[in-house]
Amino acid sequence: MPSPLPRPAVPPASPAPPASAAGGRGDACPGALRLHLADDGGLARVRIPGGVLDAGQWEVLGALALRHGDGDLHLTSRGNVQLRGLDPASGDVLGRALAEAGLLPSPAHERVRNIVASPLSGLDGHGVRPVRAWLRALDAGLCGSARAAALSGRFLFALDDGRGDMTALRADVTLRALPGDEALVSVGGARFVVAADAAPRAALRAAEVFLDAAARAPESTRVWRVAELPDGPPLAEAARDRLADEGVPTRTAIAGPPLPEAAPPAPGPYPGALAVHVPLGRLSPTAWRELAHAGTALRLTPWRGVVVAGPAGDAAARLAGAGLVTAPGSPWPRVGACVGQPGCARARADVRGDAARALPAVAASPLPLYWSACERRCGRPAEPHADVVAGPDGGYLLSVPGRAPRPVDPADPARLAAALRAPMGP
Image 1 (cartoon, rainbow, N blue to C red):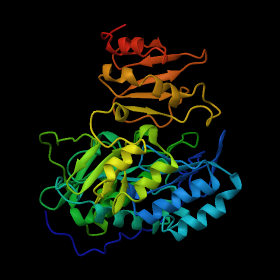
Image 2 (cartoon, helix red, strand yellow):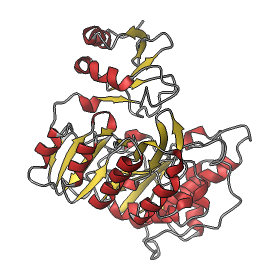
Image 3 (cartoon, one colour):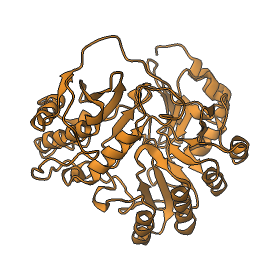
């Protein structure tokens, strides 16, 4: 592929057409400035692109949780942080503190900085190329684009260093490092290839053509993500056309053997890092304080975990003592849950408590378990999993792909395990 013309590190915004309604059709996704009122108080969601934080930023988040919320830090399935139990009037105070810590570079874009990235990239020696440069350029491009501010708070970018750990997340736009200093761009089920240094620009252009397509959708249609678009012109082709107008070469992705996929990092030590799992994504003050002093930097993962870069010698022992998982073998990485009671008005059960009581049953399941307090199943993973959903009668219904749903009782782990082992079919 011909080398592209020299480009600045930050991809500039293309000319902005009229603002799309994609980000304004009832998208109530919470942010750091626009709080969501839950049963346990205000909820702020702080976007952390790539999950990358230094210890000072982490401590700012913890101090805000202690001063204004429930004291805990809650990790999301996109590697972001939620503060809960907030005074609904605390938004201005939060905004100022986050901006001073470098966590709020653009108030207009704070809800659209949804970028996940290979958490071990550049640390363990695997992958094709580190993605930190992509991360910085894409985030700066988003924050510098008036057009991108119209994206929904649900739109997701994924940066894969070539190992394949981002594939199963089903992001709206995915960049994957390829050998030969190239990148594979995936959008709307189609793929094309660009030079590696043009990849952040390509991702931003793909998001812009999505906004154009969303603006053409029927007024009654809510289009927040690529998968929700009605059938229409291929987004990948539109993105390539826009890049060609800017002098950025692209080429068609040639079909070949499937690219390898990698599992999320299991808890334990890696070269230059320590992977930690946070049970149900909830960090107590003791736990988040220990993490703040565990290494040189933190990377939050989309699997409610944390990768500690440059861990201190006794970090694993101290974090395990704070209730975190620092070694393989624990069932906790295979269990997730929404917030449930008492935090959510729609919740029918304390799913976190029930998930903890049923933990012994997890070993019987071929798939991870996700516990939901209602049929909305907020925060459920994109990867294949078994659903345990609270019903209106106070019980739970277990749904496993390929099997008929059946009632289960989390207070009886043995029977839940038997249901998980049941043969396929009705």
